[in-house]
Image 1 (tube, rainbow, N blue to C red):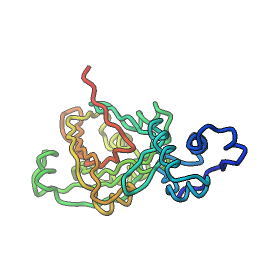
Image 2: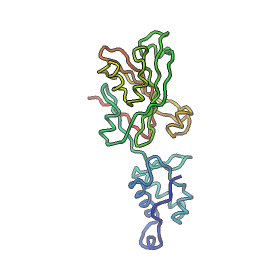
Image 3: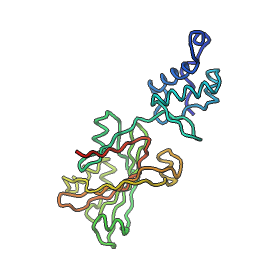
Image 4: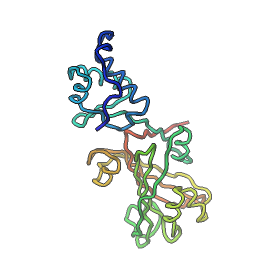
Length: 250
């Protein structure tokens, strides 16, 4: 649970205030803007806030409505009120990179290695990677972390034996681009992105701090080298409260 408000409403405050909800709203807004209440953090319950400020719960509800209208909080039915996250706007294109988008927004972000395994291709992977069904791929799991919050999870499949050892390079560098470069791929582009929605698995729900079976954005990306040969298929699950996808038609 979030910490108590930084400044309680005093009797002197009340004498000079026309409305009590304004005292609550201004106190919580101050805590949010100074970082005392962090993005994604759940606020105390209506009951706890009413007790802290010594006001009626209807006053707290009015303050929450005002903060929501100011786009400082989001209210989830049955779960509570949360500090609204700062969304990352990720432009989808043939050359766009999420790391570049984070740098442009002055956000602290990184790709974290979360494990790997060697596996035989499925029918869908065989088609997307243009390899035979008896071939193997290296599956690499990564997390995209922004401001210490996991905003997406990706399962990426690299054809073998071409990219043997890529999991070690990704773990060391945190970069697909640098890892490919060390394996001889100096240029690549996005050939295709397929966007849909899926329900979260138990594991993904825990990593993204979301309710299980909550719908998330699901993207299948296919990247190719300069000879138009697929070098990876990635299945990415994105928490919609943290990231916004932008497709431009210039």
